[in-house]
Image 1 (cartoon, rainbow, N blue to C red):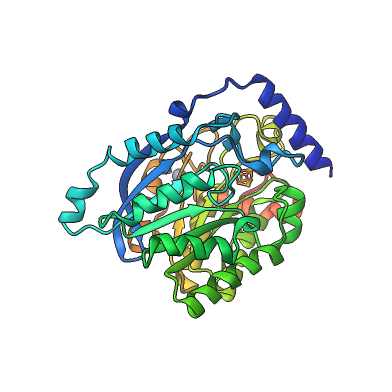
Image 2 (image 1 turned 90 degrees about the horizontal axis):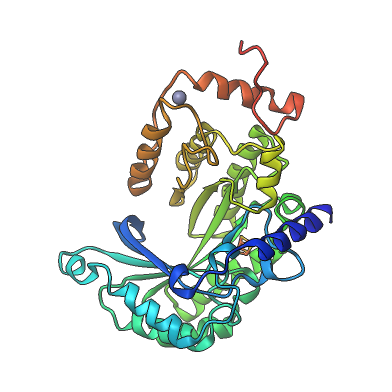
Length: 364
Ligand code: SF4
Ligand SMILES: [Zn+2]
């Protein structure tokens, strides 16, 4: 409850002080190498302009680490504006050329919230976007994000009546399989049961209606109030749980400090530190060695003051190695003299309950 109140208070402060963005400023896209369901290929990443995530704008204040509402207009946007920007960004990238050269191409549509919530992206826009993509031979996979409450059979029936047999993946921000961490520390507002219901529905529609439907879980590495060891263990445990219930892919999101969030307030007060890059590697290597599931590790913010950090000598190398390993799902094998400090942090974090670095403990 305290967390929810704090989140709400910080969010309100952000709404009063943030400069409003126009739809043109919000909409953006980039294009590059990525792992598709058919192997290494290309992905067009696109941020659609929306008025903001309903969960963050509502009474809850949203999730403790998320600042996506700062990247939205906070005001209604006309369908025409959304569609014009969508088409403009779609035409910015060499999709046709790459398709003719045999590339497999996916599109990831980010709504800074839920693509399937008609209050964030109107039903007309959703239908229109899917119609356009259904008619593009060059697009093989359509990837979207949604909270579980917007995923239901009726919505999926409609989507597949438009896109036919194109692959459609729904990414859900599960963050962790630990209900206490998700509800009390992340303020996510849904339970494991809600998530499981969506995954079971996706599996059912795949087998009963033959939809080319996939699910992905986002797993957050190091929520607030978890120490380094707990964060590693919980992320690995969450991956195991996802495999067990039939999730198709995983994407690990290590914490970075976004502005005007509760995580930022704790970090500024010295009560929180993003994970070591070593911790994120421990998670991804363990998952790739022990579980049969494609798993990506997001490297946003790596090596920056506000992101996962090791030392100046290895930050950059590791970021490049991780990006490469995402494409071929390989194990990351690397060493650096800073590793001993990480070992100490992990070893002692359960002893002193510290959520930040253990600076003054003997290392051996
Ligand atoms: S993480 Fe997702 S659900 Fe939570 S506030 Fe951000 S956009 Fe909304
Ligand atoms: Zn190092």
